[in-house]
Length: 82
Image (cartoon, rainbow, N blue to C red; front, side):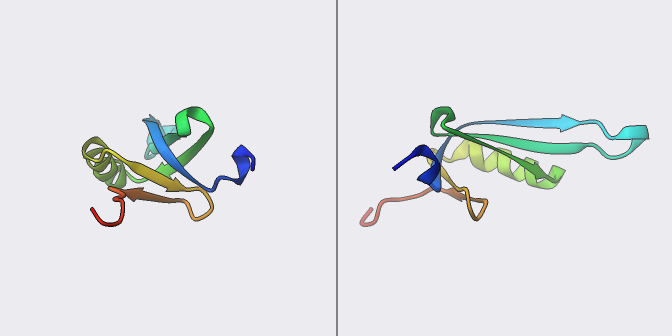
């Protein structure tokens, strides 16, 4: 098993960034995901509304996982039986 064979990883850090658009155009929001303490990184382009919602969820959720192949964030993962 190698690091690249792991397809679902835990989000350990994240960073939102905004880049100004050219000529007064709309800017672009990105969300950088640092997974498994830097073993993998992913950058997602998100809308301003999604960035706002994601910031709220990420602030209030202790465990978040990311499926690399499907590009899906999974929030509040709970062990069965809890």
